[in-house]
Length: 238
Image 1 (tube, rainbow, N blue to C red):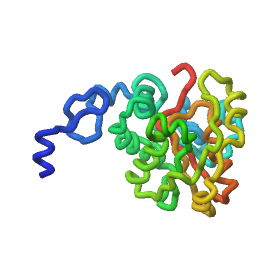
Image 2 (cartoon, rainbow, N blue to C red):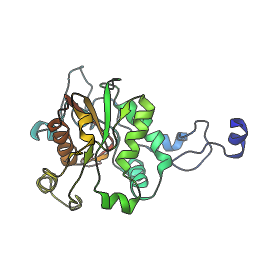
Image 3 (tube, rainbow, N blue to C red):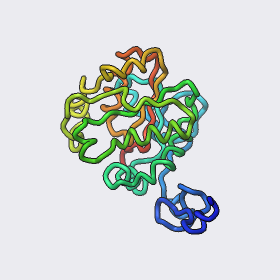
């Protein structure tokens, strides 16, 4: 039955639609055009760093000057070109077919700290945004990652009780102020965070304000340690 379906509906590249051998994969051209983050990276946010690593944890300029409440972080893609199109496709254009390959890319990026005891938790969206979009893209990525890595997931452990203004066009300071105290453990389901090592998942890392607020909410609920993982990292001059 599966073979018959593959004949009728052959696997397509999620970037351009060309036939590929791997279901949920990329063709060679789209793979080459996708800005995967590899090699030497910042240990807190996952952005690429110049040179080679000597095995020690290095930080980017931002993470050396901005307090990051989480332990370590990684990103799969640079938020530019094809990477940006993938993020926006999931977020605004119902491209949920991108979630499975994105989860695989994210799992690969998180290998330095991906252990079986992690609890996957998505960054929450206010219910009005979920109602409008019909889903929270961070939750979809979290579920995909949990399935890919064989981890437990708590999709509603955090909530955003107050609708905040959009982060776009705000300065770094305004972004942090906008999110300060605006994310909290769920009144009933937040207990799942207690004494757990948490892997926070979001679609894109820009200033880190949303991830910081989410991390602080996890720690306030008794989480032992928090790691962060995003599909894409916004990088200067990218």
